[in-house]
Image 1 (cartoon, rainbow, N blue to C red):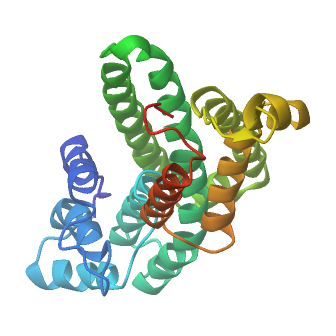
Image 2: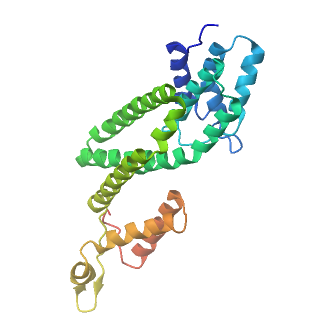
Image 3: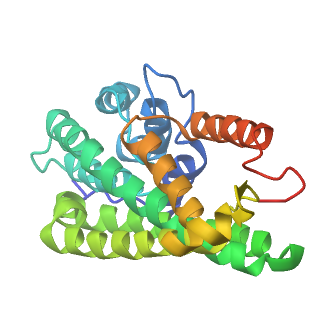
Length: 273
């Protein structure tokens, strides 16, 4: 029997299905399960001839799945390679494929959230904010183009690299070298976030103390220049990391603080902070 080989057309369609539809029929019960099924469907249809074989193969991917969708593309590509190997009788079964998928969901989600949400997006936003000085639209244009370009090329690379490596892709994702690279990128992202906070957050107070002493210039700036912006950043960090509050809840708290601050004269309503 001739060896079965996935065509470029089927792989490309599978990638597009995941790229555009990883949140297909998304729910708290199934998360990305149906998006994964959509991505595997063109592959299963090409590898297996009968409806019974296709149905049996798709049962593997009906199990719950959820991860960070950009980096998680490598898992889809990897299972494409494993499914091809199973169709050729190489001793790989659905239990093995599902075990690998389930084992990679958590690590990939943690790494992906750190790299994409916690590092890439803040870096791009920091650059975009700098380009937007004076109301220029260049920052928004830069972010839209670069973000989508990086994610599209990155996801495509990960899909085909996962397909090429098959089970060996596990080492690429969670191996020792990948962890070192991830930690380096996270450190760079942390530096960028700190620079953005120091550059763009400006909070001052016009409050005067007895004896015509400015609270801002006469007290706070002598203790720690830019103390108020630093305090606000650390307060937001504490709320989100320690109290586990959502960004929306933190923004609402800041609105209340600003409102009360204006009422008591700590903030000047005529100024923009």
